[in-house]
Length: 522
Image (cartoon, rainbow, N blue to C red; front, side, top):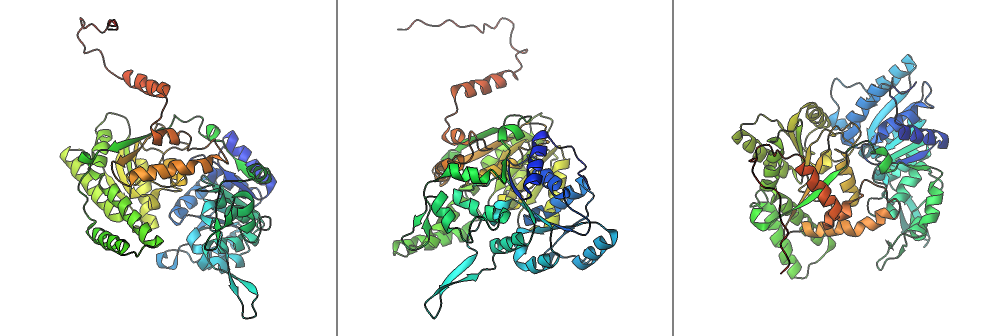
């Protein structure tokens, strides 16, 4: 079997590296074609009767199956949770029997969350290769629990969480390939879980030694480990070189237009009255009273922070609609807008406000709503319709549409729910800025003045050094300047020059004097 597509040179280089290594980890920015690299690797040694398992996000299973059918002769089976199985769906037993009869390899596409439920069935099929799409999902380091037995000895007990099940599947599979755009979400400690899914027996049964050696970990005051600054990074890079292949961002996205990223401060007078948070406001009040009484816990402070983030996001609704309408009323060829907002109620209210504004402007533009309450099929249909249109608005939660999906025809992306992790920024922007895009997308982060948004911006700035310690050439390049608003004068002048070039000066009076004389200094 072979791949029915021509790879870019950097993709072919990554695939060849993975084939030679046997098991490998591919790091490259969102939109650089990691799916094709993974399929090329899988097909290199996939005989009839063997089983390929693709583990991806639940919401990306249909897209993975669609891409597999498009570029290979494989007939993928999308493994659905029991609650999502339809009458017309083929049972897994029938699929296995049919593939054996046709003499074809089996290809199973499963969600990360399903591993705890179907691990036994996967192991029975004896997979010969596994692709860990978005391998950072398996980063959770705790795969065992330790307890003191009656005789006083310390004993371990195998856990059955997602990460532990992924590790068991890795141990039972000869060939393993991981792909990710955000290997380091926050700190280098994220890497241990990924490395053990590629090289199960090379990085220790627990994360302890890895944390102490490479993450500057010290014993915590109340147990566990306190993560410090990265240590022994050069040694870590040497060990990684045998199985980790990095595709520089400057290479994978060289042929694309330059990324346009900006943040906009929304003054208090332009923030709308927050609606739909009545119950949360009551909860906020009770939590504040509890804190005054001294009932302070991490859970309480986390919940208060979460409510503040939602309130700041909802306060920018009118601003978001106004900015989206500016794009939709422009004369550019494509007028496609994405809004990544917070909760389901934010999605519904923002979409309703968008429809109202479009009706008032007499614009026939579809508005789609995407969130976790919609099924995998519904979200895939929304994505397909959005990609096919020339003008439209997708209002969605980041959790439902912010990873593994292709939305590269977007013109303007508005992000009122400010991310607090660099990895989220990377994944979110990667939905639009990817191979196949034909025009630059503007990615805009509105910051609500006087809100928790200002603190979230600072958190990202504090975490960026940990990401840069491992790889400076990433999709996050320039994010620090954007958040700090310290873009160079040259960049500002270049943007201004580009804008002036679009002005129509033909309507100006012929006798208008556009020259000036410099006044003498007083």
